[in-house]
Length: 230
Length: 230
DNA sequence: CGCGGTCTTTACGCCCCCCTTACGCCTTGA
DNA sequence: TCAAGGCGTAAGGGGGGCGTAAAGACCGCG
Image (cartoon, rainbow over all chains, first blue to last red; front, top):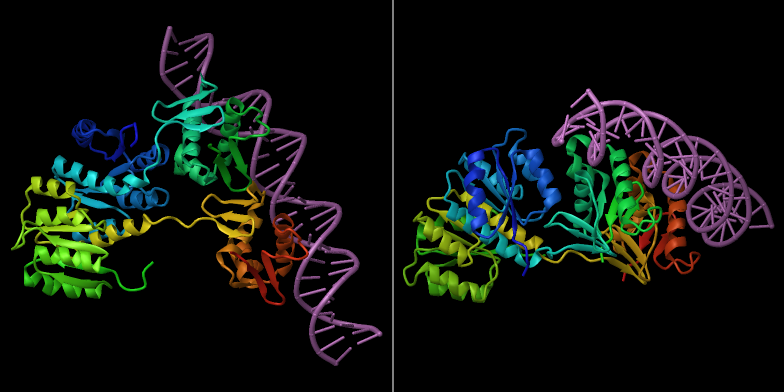
């Protein structure tokens, strides 16, 4: 059983949805996260790796269907769809695109929470272990959004933290340049690998014993980077 | 992965439901099983261990809610609830009693099938992912994109890795020169077999005990190469 | 308006990866 | 026995990716 509360990312452009869903999730023992558009939502999934996602299909910047498809390329957790429309074809399409459930608006918040519980239940065993991620004397506490080294707090800028968090969530898996760029800078900068070189360098200066011989953030030439955790 | 068609048990006392759901499931590639009452349904789950269950809450002999609870004592597969009533409290109760999904009647058969696919899908993806591929003391972890030999990490370049991964995925099958060249270098270099000789040689230098007597990557003269896995 | 921190952009040297060429060995068949 | 072709190995050169430094741009703040 994890110590921290399950994180639920709500992707919706309507403020009133957030206004009543946020407190409801909070009261039900979850930690609500908020995104108001598709791009922001995708970055939220990549950066925070929530335990479940609630996605409204009607978004201002991109089609909710595409958000779903893109999210499924790297996210395996439960995704619940909200939609005002009740066309059956849309339901079928969403479910076949990887959605776990589909609710029509207006919906009862009790039903939403119940469906969320049902979706989380079957993923319960597959949940990522909570707590800080360690690599040598470096600790990354995703809940507190804090990085320490040998117990002392390391000052990291927002972008540095986002990049480090995304790497740490990989758990030794290789993350491609594109993965990292899209997660931290958005899809518009998916090829600006120079950003990565600069920020990876800065992180190594702050975290590695010998930045020229990195042991925490490894380079996989031509492909990407990986975070080595204990 | 089962070869036979997924078995779907439908527990419902209304003949017309079976009459149109049975053929629909059959046409969608499933093997429909039928039960007309609660007791019979529970026996069916225990005897046939279906891949999923569709359960109507309105049954003649016992409350559908109790069928659900009893079923969950020994059955872990997906259970979809059907119900004529649309009381939210009933939905919540059913979902919290272990149901995976809940549909109100009347429902579209397309939606039911889509929700069934969604429920079966995440069950399939919950299976353990394939582990690393082994050959002697060499391990190739396709998930982490990492190659080790006797536990130590082996440095491989992108092209070397692509080639090795393609070979390893063959699982002992012979892969022709053309197969490998197209996979790694693209169709434009489908005849540059010298590329293969060089890179196969480099891989053998890094992986084989005696590169002159290869045991991991075998040569099939004039045809191609094969990867020998345990 | 000035200032500090952060992000972006440019510049540059180094190293490694990929491709290429060369050559010797082996097998095959005339 | 000799020629031919496929295979394996070695070595070098060109190009591009990587790391690093540092300057310029863009904030929020006082």
